[in-house]
Length: 121
Image 1 (tube, helix red, strand yellow):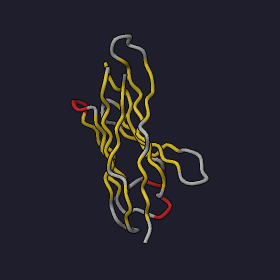
Image 2 (cartoon, rainbow, N blue to C red):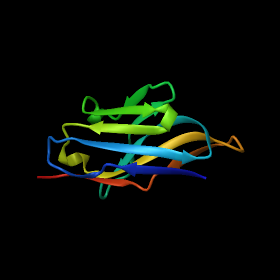
Image 3 (tube, rainbow, N blue to C red):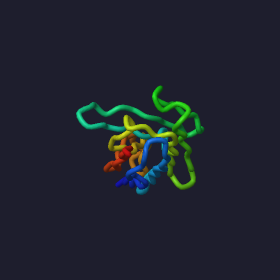
Image 4 (cartoon, rainbow, N blue to C red):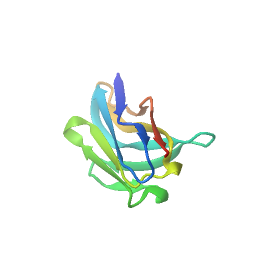
């Protein structure tokens, strides 16, 4: 089985920073993509950022220049540094991993349980 465990959410004032981390563990052969989605109250889940095995990243337009995603392939971990946070960044952030499983070598997507980020004064 594969598990994704997130950490780092919380309450921060506008303009502040938070760092989210996500660690994948279990029977993993390789991770193709990792990243974060978020879901704000009353809205659909949206892709925030993703990183491939080579380290190339993509960001949703509203977070470009403020969020930075990094990856440690050896530890199957990604870190999301979020700066200049705005109230509209308030959401539950979900880590995901698009990977090839060990054992059966099948490709699958796994999700974390989510971590709440609240940006408010």
